[in-house]
Amino acid sequence: VETGDIGPRAERPADAAATTAGHVELYIHSLIDPEQERQRLSKRLEELERNIARLEARLANKGYTDRAPAELVKQTREQLTNLQTEARTVRQQFESL
Image (cartoon, rainbow, N blue to C red; front, side):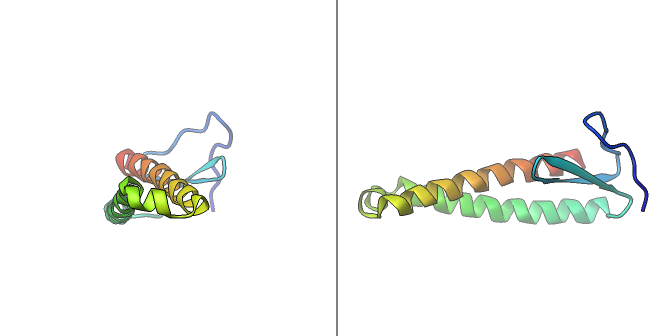
């Protein structure tokens, strides 16, 4: 295992996949096939977009927001926010490959 630069000035290698763990961005390079990683990220993004659309439709349904317990509606909104955040991250990872 080779350790590269560590710290806020570390730059992402051109052939590296990136992931975030907490507030730390990790770069893993020379271990992945960029085309396979693009396919994986694309598939994950499609799944996220389907789930986002499903939750947006649920929240747009006045019957749901009016009749469901407030805690459930709040949980649905939080799930939507989390999925949107993950989708942005996956999109950024895809675009950086």
